[in-house]
Amino acid sequence: MVIADVLVQVLVRFGQILAAPLKNPDMLWIIIPIYLNWVFTDYFQERKGTDFGNAITNGVIQLWVGIDWIRQTIKTIEFNALFITKTIICVISMIWGLLIMVESARAKPIAHYIGRVREISYFMIVATPIFYGVIAPDMITIATILLFFPIFYGVGEAFDRLLPAPPGEEDSLGGVSSDLKMPDMGAGAGAMPEMPAGGGMPPMGGMPKF
Image (cartoon, rainbow, N blue to C red; front, side):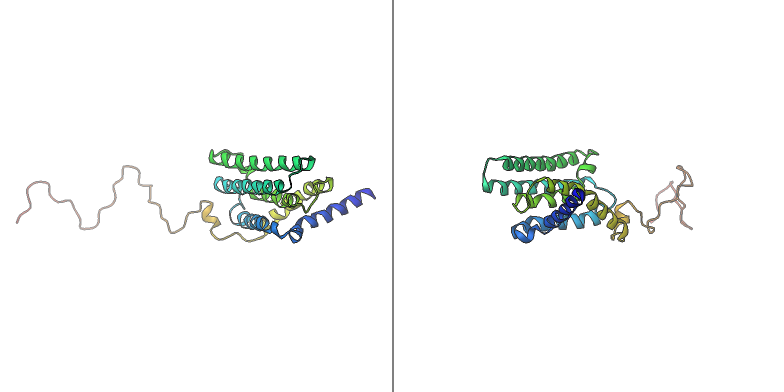
C-alpha cells in the first residue's frame, strides 16, 4: 500500500535525521549544545512554563544556530533553488530568535509561546542535518518533521509529568518557608506592642540625679 510505504519512509527518515551527526561529526559542535540545553532547561526550568529570562536564552540559541546554518550554506555557493530555500530558512530562524528576545525583553505574553525550549530545540535538531548536507530537504523530510513533532512534544510532556520535581521547584513557584513567621495582625493597626515586664518609660519631668 502507498500509505504504508510512505510511513515506512518517514520512520526511516526520522532515524536518519537523528543519526545524521554520525555521518558528519562537525555537526556535533552544534547538535550537542542543543540537546543539552533542551534536556536541562525543559526539566529544571520550564516544567511549569517559560519565563522571560528562559525565553531570551532560547532566542539567543535560535539566533546563533541560524548564523551557523548560514555559515554552512555559503560554503557551497550555488545559486539554485536549494540555496535560496536554505537561505530563507536561515533568515526565518534568525528573525524568530530576534523576535523572541525582543518580545521577552518587553515582557510580552507571546514570548511564553514562541520562546519555549522544546519547540525551538525540535526545529533546530531536525533542520540542522539539512544545512550540513546529510539529509535532503525533500517532501519525505518535510512530512517527517511535521508528523514527528506531536510525538516529540508528547514524549517530552510525559517525561515532565512522570519524573519527580527537580529540587527547588517549590521555591521557584513562590513557596514560603514554614520557618518564616508573619506578625500577628489581629490586634489591629493601632495596637501598640506589649512592653516587657518591669519596664517603663523614664519620668519626663526633672533631670536624672548624679
